[in-house]
Image (tube, rainbow, N blue to C red; front, side, top):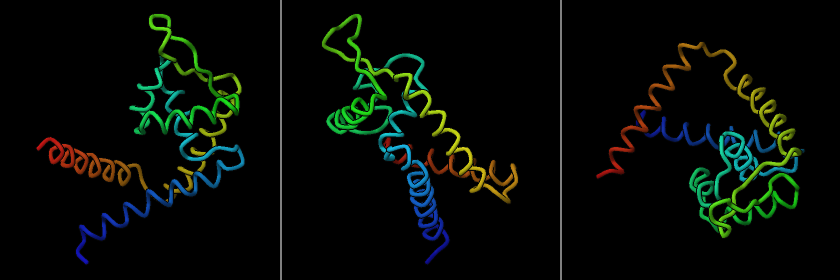
Length: 145
């Protein structure tokens, strides 16, 4: 196995393990990865996105997002609000209940990051970050061709 292959496999394993551990820690909040990811994206958006905009931001298809939003709405974490310009369009808003849960998500995620990065210097982290950015740029070039 060459080093590029090993690196790719480790990167995949790291990503899966990180998400699995975060999922495990967030399970007590009644949130799957898909649900907390939607809440996280909503908390980062300065305006109320439409369902289509949110689907694009999260990286899922509209029907998949619709099911996630139904579940989040049942948990009283989001509201669908009619758009002021087009009543057929629904904007997605967080509820006050969701804001408290997002704070818990942030706290849990921050603790996990600190644990994961234990023993790594800022320089090492920045070096990895730079490498990943270059790899992403290479992937974008491939995608453009």
